View (tube, rainbow, N blue to C red):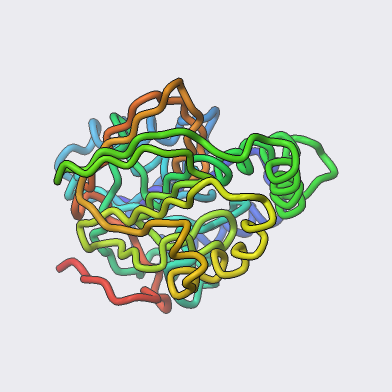
Length: 315
């Protein structure tokens, strides 16, 4: 097997990054592993690197371990969906890190030895037109928060955590509350209404820990769809606590204004092009075809960590 460690040079070769480099070298040398350390040069460069290595070593089993957040995981997943020889791991370094919330003992994700010795699980992907999603797609309020938070994140003195809070404030008080859309299901059911937010989950969490898809499983071959009707801001405030901790499905007040269902495939249509958030990255679409791609993402769970929810391990 060939190991690849993909790092982001934005930190300017900080002491922490130099320490990580040394841990990579020590961990690989003591196991006599074949390895590469690669620094990305621009957005989506990780995709280019992964594909170039697949082309150079087409028959080799390769493990790519990347430093980054949910957007980085999305990037590498889109580089080689469904390739049985390619495995991906992540060392969390994002603002939300929601995908790794599906696992226990998350501190091990930052340990090089644990990443090298980790086991591989085969997880589903969500296909959204021609793009793949690892964790969750968000439309409406959740998406507007991400857009606004990204603006604040570019301000030097604002931390990622504070930028998200400020994004919530702007999205809640100053942005339009509701998105008109049509959901078309394979059984012929059509839902056409204005919705406050819609989340399509493979994983359970988004937005820095909101449990928006509490029934979601990473390997059940199903999409989890949570759609909340357009409601007043006051009503939304009364429900946001249960939406965060994932207990909203148990509340009758929530059941009256939302639908939660599972599907393998459905379509979404808008009256005009809308922003959608895929694993924290913003795209713009007018029509979206959603489907699940079973077992297309080979993900490394570091040694010492495990799934918080029962899944099926690959051989």
